[in-house]
Amino acid sequence: MIALKEDQVLILVNQLSEMEKKMNLKSDSSLQRSFQRIKTLLSDAGIVYSIPMGEAFNETRTDCEASIAGDSINQLQITEVIKPIVWRKEGSSLSLIQKGIVIVSGK
Image (tube, rainbow, N blue to C red; front, side, top):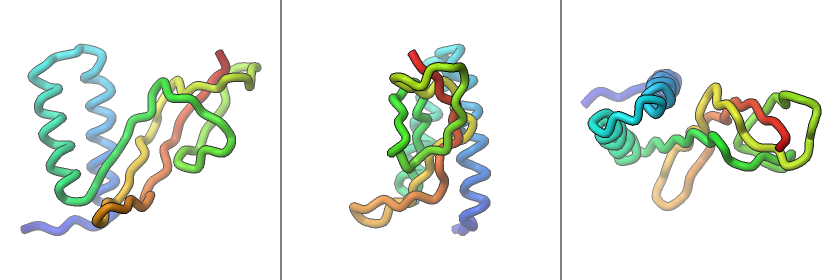
């Protein structure tokens, strides 16, 4: 079995999330199944990631670093995800290993 270092895992997950974002634009069901299999394998290895596109954002959220686009700061929503949120799963607990890098804007 090959053991990956944490920085290698983050590179892999970041590239995978970029491909997943591009794939979602095409909505190809065979590709979606392949991505789900890869996510399941990562989860079995203790790595979980999330692409928080469209989620609400406020200043108390600690799993993302955000840049605000536009003038409004009311009802902020994540409009672009540059890097996903990545956690390491150990038993039933999750520990954050990469904050999401996002762009937010007001509604």
